Length: 182
Image (cartoon, rainbow, N blue to C red; front, top):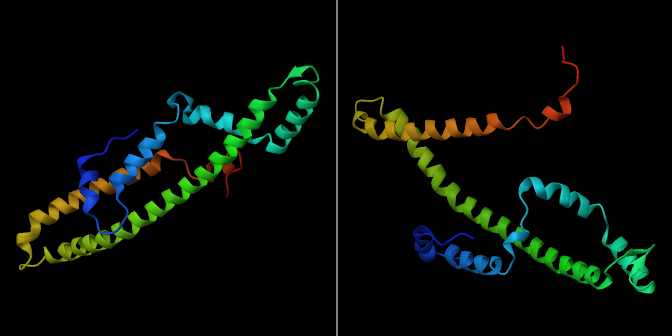
């Protein structure tokens, strides 16, 4: 769980009804009710999710019905009917929460993008204007500020190139083993 930073607390004054700090408190309150030992790592999650998704709820329900008719077992294999039904009910209820949470994440992300693009475009326009202005006699005094901004842009672009260099192209796996094009 994340704690509320000073920056997040200061955002309580943002115009609008969404308060990031208040939302974070509520998310942390909900997260504290979930057993943290049940979380999977990214690598652990994939095979477990594949195995779970391979079996439809209808099959689990049918096996539970068969086990209920046969005293809790099917083909001599014990099957906990009550646990199966409770798990399916819990999963169904949680899937609605997961869908709502994904929708909320998209809405928050879009709101952040909408707000950030306004200031980002203005800041970049000023950077571009300053880049042209420092080459003139009237703008030479802006050179130190421009150099600082230019260094920030170079650092940002270098980090972006490093991230994209680490990730293989999307079609790299599809083209693996294919003959080279001429």
